[in-house]
Length: 283
Length: 265
Image 1 (tube, chains in turn orange, cyan):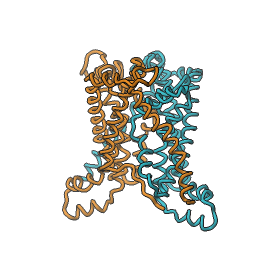
Image 2 (tube, helix red, strand yellow):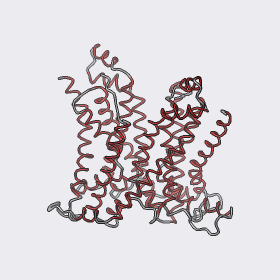
Image 3 (cartoon, helix red, strand yellow):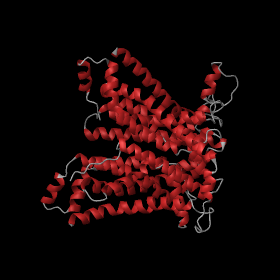
Image 4 (cartoon, rainbow over the protein chains, first blue to last red):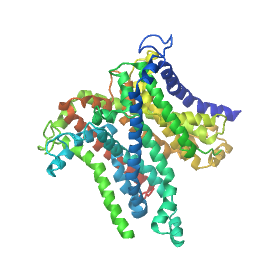
């Protein structure tokens, strides 16, 4: 009884906060998808937004396109971060933490500012163009990369490498070095040891890196706005547009719902295999 | 074989280091550049942009707003998240699994979706957008991080100490304040700091939920459209970067004197 009252006191404030400012807003967003116009009454319900959304294949194309880009971003960040984590954990001994800190320092700097830096680099008179011109690879100062999907990909990979490196680094640190010795004693070559011992043991780190890069990238709209231009827009830009220029809130609400359902399904399946939010009880 | 691997690894590390740091150094270099255009070659050294920064009242105001939002929302997230952490780490109750699922959901929701949902609710209830609406958004996204960080710490030690304190006559809440929370202090500080950093940098939620008052990232974003304002934006970036690095070094130094030996973890 006493215990129940304590638990109730502890759990009520966070629950109420989550209910009011997380669950209720999502329900209201779902209702908004059934409104006939941005302003005015909710009733009578209308399927305008649904008709609009489902009769416009370009929305689906963009959603698919953005999913591909998010997938590519996650895979590339992991592929680039994995070898460096491996080097730091298995080759640099006690200096590995300071070397890692140095590497992921940029992650502490505002995301917007890092994107801004790439806008400067990729611009028509930016660093990249000048290097290419001095090498004689291109003639004029055209912004070959800025305002394209490639620019969005480069910038996003740049932004996410540190976040991909952290969980992989942590997973590698947990590997018992005696496992490597045992494998070598049993006659395994270094590459066999890597593929049969190290790699499988780092999979949880790789998986959580993938998860934490893929999901935010799927809803991305700021990077495409700054470096992507018209050809580099993503699904998130579509949502943002409905609340800006297009001013179609019901459609924007529906688009958000679609993204939410997609992410929800992905997390559900993912969590089946790799539980990222498990907390043991110790009472 | 191992030697080759070592050199290859070092080479790759340096390459990646340059790739990650160069853009940041570039911003800092341009903040001292005597030209409105952000192009090479650099023109000459100037402190003009820094002088202009001191007079940019709108910008300073935005930075102040970000500071206030960061502090209030991190305190709120730390208090609410820790309460939830104690509940899930110390009690097994019906609905625990359900609570955990809901409470960690903000971790996996794209911010643009949450921003839209909150915006629509505030609009439906005729709540005017302000710094408070941004604080609410930031508290929601930071709560699960705090909860997981603190719960991990609490799961790390059994509750013998708490039982001992209560056997010796301490009340439950007294035990919480004088045993549980002090033991969790490193986790609480880490949770608070990471919440603050997240809030100070957060753009998407702030953009949707800001009323007439801007946060620093929203203000910077609004400046990016005007080429003539870019140098000032870059200079702000440089200041924020340098301050972040100083804070980072300072907290590392604090950690070292706190443990009395260079830390390895």
